[in-house]
Image (cartoon, rainbow, N blue to C red; front, side, top):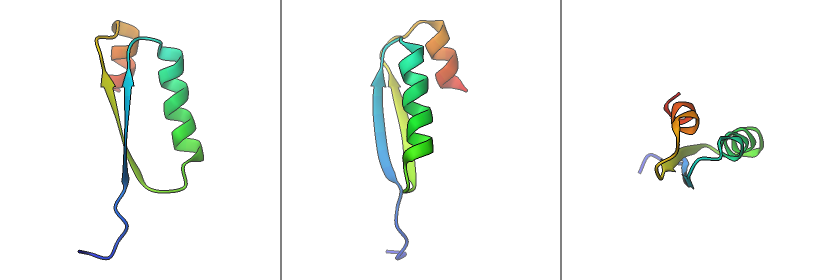
Length: 55
């Protein structure tokens, strides 16, 4: 063990609703005080949400 604190994994399922997906990401980035690795699991969203998640 290196002694460093490992980042927390946060896994968020999503299906369409780009507005809430974007808010979730922005709020986690703004309000989380610890190191984290964020993974969105897309369950077949339409193009706007797919494109956002790719970037």
